[in-house]
Length: 582
Figure: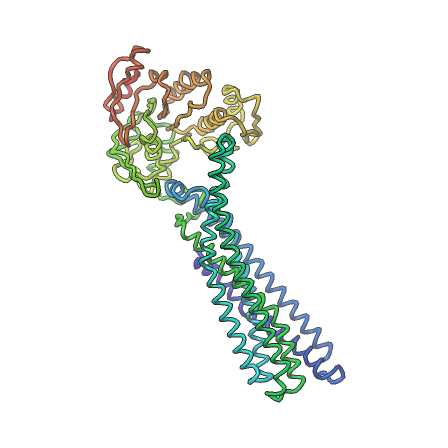
């Protein structure tokens, strides 16, 4: 990313270089005028007040222009880095984001971006002050080449020492940055796990030990870095004063210099003290920014599209999967079909890696068909719905919708056909319709009334909900409201009814799902509510990543359903004929 930003803003940086040189030369002219006045006396000055104020005016104009260029560059880079990073996160596949973890992504979007932006804020300052120091050295060379050579040796020694000290802190900074990721995770645990910790002192102590260990590591590395920086500043300051003292006490004796030249050297060195100090601090901030850029690149986020929030505008999808094409008019011959589909992923477990494989899966989902998916924890239910909805790319096999195969080029448009409420769903404030515009407020109000939420929640003219701080069951009802207003053709619900009270659970299974089925929606519902199994057209059971046959004994005994488990690769014609649990 750093290289890309360099190339994008190279003209700003190139303009900064000559402006910095002019600024440095003008600054030295001010020093020369003041040195001349002190060395020769006010009565024998080579330059008058007119010269002095003219040079000061030029210095003001050059400084203002340079600062405006720097401010413009800084503002552009801030916007650019944030836009690029948000776009890259938006474009990165879900599986990769889940693998990275929320804490790392949040830390990058906050900590790293803030530090990375400083690079382009500090770089022009570094150029300016380097130019001032070089112009100062050039002025010294003009005054006395011999003394200038000795001063140069001293400054080189200072520079080498500073460089070595700054570089010695880089590894400490990298380790500190990794600990910040860990601390971000601890912050999440502190808030999201507050209930569990309140009920368990053992868990609270274990969490406390983890936090203290992380903070101890951060404190140690921060102390090490700051100690080196303190040494660096003191070393530079003392070394510069040694050079200054050498000029004052030994230059006249060894180089036979006039008082005027010695005064000019001293004035120049005093003037250079602040630029040298700024260079030292800038070097520190640049190293910190480089660590931030390396951390950003280490996440290996996907490059953002031209419009990261409108993938359809960038995707090469043709007309096959245009959302207005298949859209809500799916029919039996336009089913969602998984043919020999598999998906494999690895995750960290007990200090090692654990591999989980889904499939091969052969199954078809048809419009107007209600399918329940059951299975134990870790059986692959949630992974299956992420694969069939395009959130996870299938490792093998073929997925088709309406006879069109899903490919990398049309995956974005394919996903537009799905509405999903997962176990870890996010609830948005604004309700949108099928075209992404603010939803019909009257429709939203009707659903709020039907869901029993109208007394608690108000909706404004832009279909924004004024209250999201609700119980989990009520939040799920709002999530379902979003799905119903978006009116997607395929609806996938993961344990949606688990947090509902018995009355609304019955409404969900006996009213809402049948209504959606009657509208021709493809309905895929993960559930464990066996009292309502008889409402499904069929039931699929996941076991160790595969779909296996299932005997509906409980449904048979309680509801008189006939027949055993279906061949789970049922065709669309079979699905249309079946209205019982199979």
